[in-house]
Length: 304
Ligand code: HEM
Ligand SMILES: [Ca+2]
Ligand SMILES: [Ca+2]
Image 1 (tube, rainbow, N blue to C red):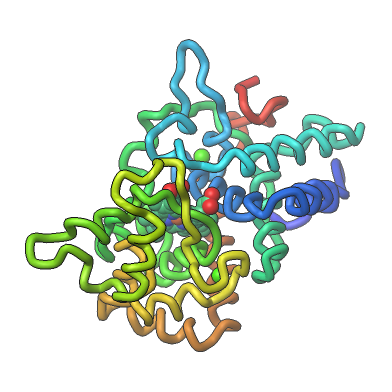
Image 2 (cartoon, rainbow, N blue to C red):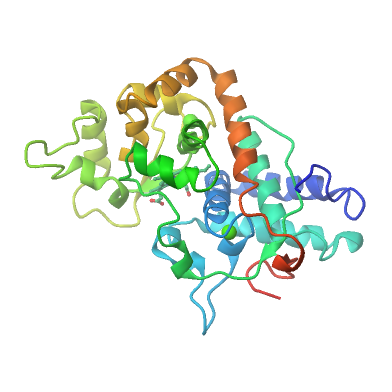
């Protein structure tokens, strides 16, 4: 039921209004890009793409954003959507007509393009959800220690194929990770191997240097050590070199069932970009709310 140009009659300029805010935010900080992209993913995988992730906790309710899996979401993603919403609502005809869920979808499309990734027509028409609890996040988001089977089953439960999963994982071509998310791979991995043997040896030493044991938990490192600010297919080339940061990344090359796709996209960025756009569009359709299932929030961080 989503459609391009959904707001053509009520707020025809919504996409250019959002783009203006995203451009300004991007000039202030590059973090806007990975923060917004990850926010969209964490929204869509929990209760569908309905901005449930944006709700702030209140006295009576601990919301999704305060669940353990969401605590590391960077504030600049939320800030981008809040600022874009304010800009949209400043236009009289658009006021309270565009959902936070759709603004997040548009902003996500825009940040990918700003970091030299593919651009695409974004489907719109989502309503904002009516519930958001930390408990509802449990088991809905993939873990960095997941293997191929676990990743496939989680993505399949959202209607996404292994191909979509491999394409979407390339989001890790941008952005940051805290050391704790992969320290199991560089220290005390197993009794026979202190370091994960699927990890490139030189890269492992670099990671140990950036993330010494007992490192400040706030320290975060680039997930793509080669082109950290470029949305590109370098992610797959890194996997071929044993330079995937998480087990969930490296397993895509280690497992024979997903390796051919990694190899194809490592050498064909056009094919990768197409697969990524297809998968993002599919992800944007997860659990879309219509009619009485949702509404258009006045404040993206609170229910009306
Ligand atoms: C396939 C399974 C996935 C796992 C296990 C996973 C896990 C993680 C983890 C552990 C981090 C580091 C968080 C931190 O320490 O701050 C991260 C960061 C990130 N993830 Fe994923 N992720 C997955 C898929 C995705 C997908 C599908 C997207 C988007 C399409 C995505 C986008 C991002 C981005 C952009 C960042 C960087 C965030 C930042 O710099 O603020 N991830 N992910
Ligand atoms: Ca959601
Ligand atoms: Ca990159």
